[in-house]
Length: 276
Image 1: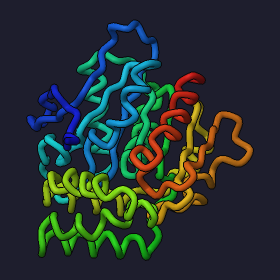
Image 2: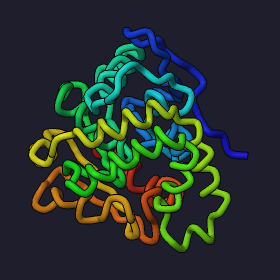
Image 3: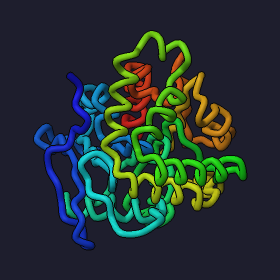
Image 4: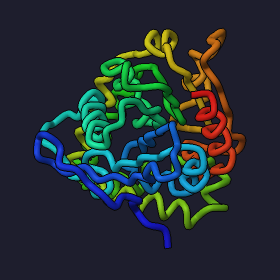
């Protein structure tokens, strides 16, 4: 049976709230560290299928983001992406890591971009998986508001039941029913208050296209060929002509390439780690 979190350690952040994480450790002597940031209403368990392969080439740190998994929700009606990034910086400080590459799925990618903007000296690489540097469109902002309304009126479970099927490629809904249910189980663990605050934080994020185009570190942009949440063009739009930008398309995958096409995504991330 799959777990809904990989975390087995935690720190108390400066504001007193608990942040849970997994750390593969540095016993193997790896010089490179990657931090895997899951998406909205997800958890560290999103990375379970990639972890064994990535541990072969790097130290891997995997947190449950605030209000997700077993990490505690924090005060505030809006969780800006910069606030999530500050949590990750505290985790890096706690682990005495001067630099790391951030690999973010969906909302995790928005957080990684915020971290690159605020703490550029702490990143030696950035990967966006099923994510984008673009800000929300007006339609997407309206959908964030509708999501918040649903969560507040009906609770997290009905919201997750409606959301999760959209995350998978249509064919995989039939072929991977147990995986779909697993992603729902992960989502049910998300704090309702935290989910609403994170949705508003995503709505408020700025366009960071220029930041990504001018990044001084290697960048990986990975998309799912059948992603219904973040289309390929939204992920790859900054790649053209950029020498430090690597791209990958997971054929057949929707928005959950780490689970739908784990070997394909793992191979792309391993190659990316090799250029850090």
